[in-house]
Length: 589
Ligand SMILES: [Mn+2]
Image 1 (cartoon, rainbow, N blue to C red):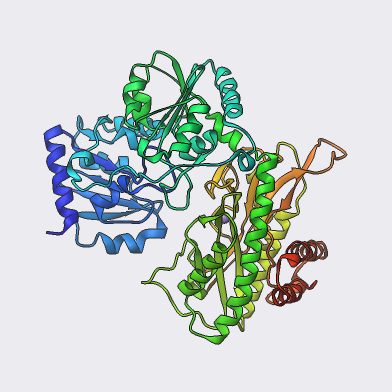
Image 2: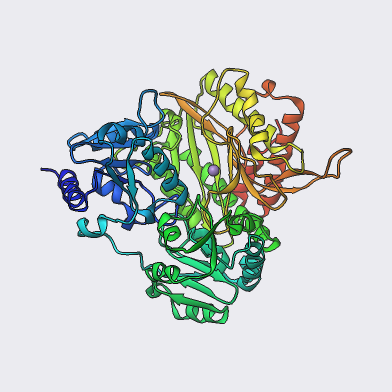
């Protein structure tokens, strides 16, 4: 019998002993992060499927795995010799998890989840859905504690200080603003469980999770106390001294449950982000949005200065890489992975480099059409001097995080490739150069990036942009550009990306992406003030594939000004050879 089926058998035994008729294992951890430490790879352990998103459900006689369209092929392959059947999320005819469980179980049955890896909101929704089938929900059991015998421990990576010269605001100042915010909700304390919010508040960074410089912890802020719950092995002496000076007490990660159970105070938590385990410990929870996320996305002057420094370094690395890549592909012998390795090595030469900010997307030709394609040794292909290469990548520097996409023409292009390259560029420019009144939110502006391609009956299904952290997670919300209703207004000092794309299956993909900063504009004639975007990213867009006649005059003008600005800012930092290349690349069109 394969390992996966042995694991399912172990879970079924435990379920029988606990009188549970179905157990749901999501891919989340206690901190609702985009990436999860290996300790919480329970869904992979139980199902054998290792994609980033999916939910496994096991009953005594059936097992099913839900995942989205990105992973249909991979999941089908990975579960083919197991008890699991594949449920294709958001496809017509696929039951929801609750519907499926409702069909499997008799009325009066009991479903289990681990409250510590499910949010308050998701548990409450599930309770309601299951109640329609006469099913109850238990949230107080983590079977993997017992049946996963070689489960990884909590990470012990060291925590480091993000100095005030880069953070721009002390922990003391942040904490006093946080206290004011929760007092407005009549709360007497705030529990922060999202890891980038803990790290931001304490001006600390970690290394527990791929790409995100955060560390596994909870932070409890009350009127007279600040308590950090984390593994003490993670804290070097200078961090302990720093925390003591800031008045932060450190307790063991697992002490959170006991401490919260004994708490008489009204503690504020956010239902969409806090796990149900925390919620069920609290005698007097107050459900409200966490003030830290909205404070964190407003970048202070020091952080903005840091972005400018990081973008300059990233632009230098990108220019060196683009010049090298265009020639190296002509010379032959390159693959997606070799191009990626070179780009990372050029970034690593830059001061304060701390790793890449997400898995590099390096998609040649048809791979460019797979939106989340990350080359691996199994998928890597030779890159030839023709067609398009889509490269979406970014870096963590200690003074700022970057996210940039450039699509490189490697040789002869088809008319369709040139048209798509130009349509995406038009959308990118349209959004980048918009002026908008105060109160406007991202989903109102999103269509600016899509309208040029909608004329041709083309669309893309991902969002057009997201916030970017300051030496923090590359995806930062809640503000964003997307088609769905997301009513967070864009305000000066927020960062946001502009990244429309066109994806033609089995052929090619195009995406252009810059990271931008919302800045003050003019007062305006009516209903101001107005805001606009400043381009933070400093990297040319290759002009040879552009069908210039398709651009409108003011789009062409904006584009030429951007290219000129890139040249002006980067030229002094490049040697003659690269400066000349950049000069050629940024000639007006
Ligand atoms: Mn991005």
